Length: 264
Image (tube, rainbow, N blue to C red):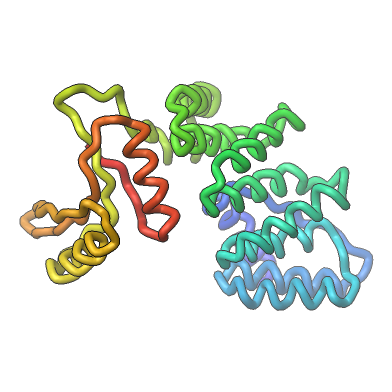
């Protein structure tokens, strides 16, 4: 049963985070058992349990790069990006030859990306590729560099890395999931873009969000759509023609916690 859970754990990490775990052998079976318990917490989505167990092990002077990596990933999944950032930096500074070095660089970049600091995130992803051109995480790095390019308004970079992802890793999961990543094409006089921040089947919920956004000063509005005979109500903000303007608006709304999507 334990072995089956660990196999599922490895698959979970690869599919949901783009990270690969390598199970290590330890001199003391008790320590290995505790680390396995930590992994099961993460597998089951109990990030606070994983954090508690990981911090307990560190407080007991049980230090290893794998322990720190799992702990950093747990903080990342739990939304504590600052602590996750600290943990990943410890791996890079104190475990120079760690086999989790690439994962730590990717994780560090993700902590900045999720905080909206796309410039620092881009630096981390580029550092990952430059420090190890043969990294097994190159597809994930390409995908994230494409996203940071679009987030920073650098459409050329966004397209360049997405093309690399499609060309070099056509069957990779990242490539399949992001095959339609291009958020904007060249704008024309007949085209405008808007940021969608919600879609509801309940019109009251849509109206409440629209009014809330308007009260904040956003040019929000509601559109009705139909799918398979069922009505839905989309809440959108702005009607802009310039790519940089819509990206700036999307970035601002995203920072405020709204689930954003740029739509033509």
